[in-house]
Amino acid sequence: MVMRPISDAAVERAAASIHQPRDPNTLSNYNAWRTKHTKADYEIDFDAKRLKGTIELTLERLAQGERKIILDTSYLDISGVAIAGLRAKYNLASSRTEPYGSPLTIEVEERHASDQQSELTVQIDVQTTNDCTALQWLTPAQTTNKKQPYMFSQCQAIHARSLLPCQDTPDVKSQYTFNIRSPLPVLASGLPTGARDFQPGKDGKPGTLLYTFNQPLPMPSYLFALASGDLACASVGPRSTVWTGPEELKDCQWEFEEDTEPFIQAAEKIVYPYAWTTYNVLVLPPSFPYGGMENPQYTFATPTVVSGDRQNVDVVAHELAHSWSGNLVSNASWEHFWLNEGWTVYLERRIQAEVHGNEQVRHFSAIIGWKALSDSIAQFGEDHEFTKLVVDLKGKDPDDAFSSIPYEKGSTFLWHLERLVGKDKWDRFIPHYFTEHKERSVDSYEFKSTLLAFFESDAAASEKLNELDWDTWFYKAGFPPKPDFDTTLADQCYELADKWQALNAGKSTDFEPKADDIKDFTANQSVVFLERIQTFSEPLSPSLVEQMGSTYAFSSSKNVELVSRFYTIGLQARDESVYNPAAELLGKVGRMKFVRPVFKGLMECDLELAKDTLKKNRDFYHPICRNMMQKMLERFEKGK
Ligand code: BES
Ligand code: ZN
Image: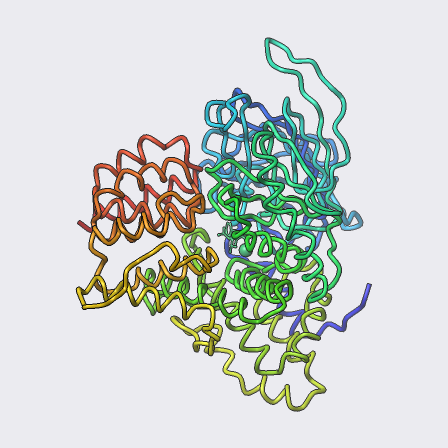
């Protein structure tokens, strides 16, 4: 353990923070008590669609004389609380504080209040409810082989509190033990320590096994993850496996086996050795609302990454990069989310450049990112709070602030710093930053001070860093300065799009679309082509949309990145032939990145069809996605 001198200012800040923690999105008093270890003993009840059991928290006392432990909960049933095995008094707030849930206040009686005792163990008997926002339950009919039920969790940003009572803030890190009973195989965000202790079923229910996992590295609550269902696994590298349904296993293995280990080695070269022992991917059912989620040991991924062409493995590079940025060094609150996602996008692109041995792919990926940034800024408006790098989330729901902005403005900032100090020097800072803050949580001010301190003895770098307008980068809404992109890989896509634009404008041109136009394109180059078409002020004519779909086979592609963008173009063009296929896609894919634009386009074209689609697929969507669609619909109907 390295001892660091503590300044008076730091002591004052610490004292003040007891009353005003730096994370505004938790109701817990985490500056008075701090979770060190969490034990989750849960039984998965597929019939009742709930988890039931006991959560045991080991809490360190930080403030003397503090007689209350306040934990986050959201839509949980609490049936008993004990401290050190003795029944304790508690109160679960009867009304919710939106959007943060219902605080659970536990009284620390005199006998436990001795300041000599630095730790307390609290046991809470708990079950989840139907309103749980962190879990999706699928019936056998909703799975591909229709044989078994399925369940999975998604806790980021503040949904862990609807799965377990906890200090639901990324500013607190705990070790975890998972003891999970289920009739079906279980994965949890830890290292598996066994499956044993069979118990026969009662009342016609299937028997259960106890699946145990241990997470020795301290992690924030949002990385708590569980999945259970008819799961099989295959190797995709020396320290990696892929998990999915038995029927999908071969395809998933093929998709990831070539890149996983090279990605890990590239990341290790850029930062330092991988800390989590194994890196595995769980490919979920299609309702998984995100592209990927960096749960330790098991990245959770949408099946849309398995496109049969290895063209979407950048999601793996991204989630893997979180093993350093986010999972080892975590943002201290969602106001500093760019430290998680900006760093991760930055590393993801460095990994790609390393693996491909060229910088052009990095620029190309950043060009795609810049388009996503522009879309997000347009969606919020250029002056909006959520277009800042460091945002104010007091009283807000972090899910509402979610966009490409922290990803792209954040990675643009880091790239800017790389150029400012020079790549060689910056490359020495990367491992330093991730060593200095390993197993901790950081905010933007600590990032800044770590960087300034690292270059203190380097006059040239220091001067540049001190001259940098930090406040503008942190707090100015809207676009950051645009990097000077190498557009080599994008130019061919723009040129082809321009030809279509000319065709659409009826300009005399000798351009005749043929399948060969895109034969040398990677899928991402087709993405750039389609996105360019989307930016044209005049939508394509419906007949050109149909011609494009058939000539380039976009309408029959297995790659949803292409299909969804193509449908968006068709919807913009009011091409009625895509309305039904677009609605069908919405019944097959619940990844919000695709649902958002396609559902928006469909509402604008055919509101009744859009409403029907939501109604028909309500149970298919994850609660987070369903709520988003519901909100989109309400806003659309109000605005009409
Ligand atoms: N951690 C995020 C997903 C997330 C963020 C879930 C905030 C809930 C709240 C994950 O690492 C991510 O960024 N996923 C991207 C993948 C991509 C950038 C390659 C996604 O889901 O699209
Ligand atoms: Zn991410």
